[in-house]
Length: 393
Image (tube, rainbow, N blue to C red; front, top):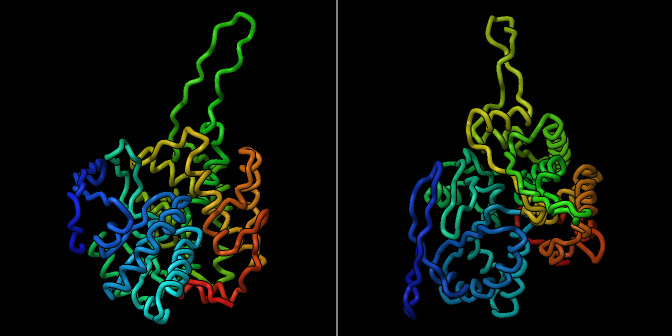
């Protein structure tokens, strides 16, 4: 799905090598500018840390408007994965630019832009060099919605052509997708239970005439270290998210479905007892048990972060966990564990993660020193979930 290439200058190309469950070498083009990027592709995929989304969206928004005005063609954008109402920020930015740069109705823009938001990534992977990546798993299912609203059939056709049959449309629009991205809440539990593994101490100051000591970083497996107590914390965090979704009458995946669909482990395990018909009875697996199966049986466990500046904290806490707190406050269904986790990590890091999200700042949902929960009414949130933007008052 490519447009004709710009004619000025030679095309810059490179290669990316993937290993693991997807072993392949890919030829890629490198755009010299956002303008070249937009004019060379029918579909843009935003696949980078969420704390970089605003900067990238600010850079290519005017190029998208220029292309739509000139070509009268559809522009599709996929956000992998969506968090912090990034699609809303982008849509409102595009609408503002459209009004300032054109004399035509906003309905023409609405007909020319589709933003598909994924609740998680299609794969789990680790970067191994500047042009290589190790793919650990390909997810069985990826939740998505498209704004402005588009039928499931239309979006599915595009997604399956590009990425295969693994996509599940979620009723509830952007609210459903915002509450379907489990990685931030899971990483919050993992970090709180393993922070000393992520934050190795520096060598201590010298003491008398004793020799200097080395304090090496010790690798650790993430799934293996989701012990029963850490797993129980993650389950409790998930219950807060599920309760918020219930208040909104939205169906979202559970943490158990997330691990099963992402890492190919079962939801249940046999017990030592049989049921009344003589069949082996089953019980649900716990989060800790699912992760131990990943580590010991599936061999798709990943090494946990060994740097306190990990995306698990710097990206996921302000750009993932905070939105759940906002929705919980809005609905009078407080996410106390989420909010407490933010406060604990803010104390550890000497900063206020609660108010660092630039996307939510841009939408007026974060003030100078606290959340602005009452910026929009619940009805305005529900309208936004399908429109892709908050209506101007």
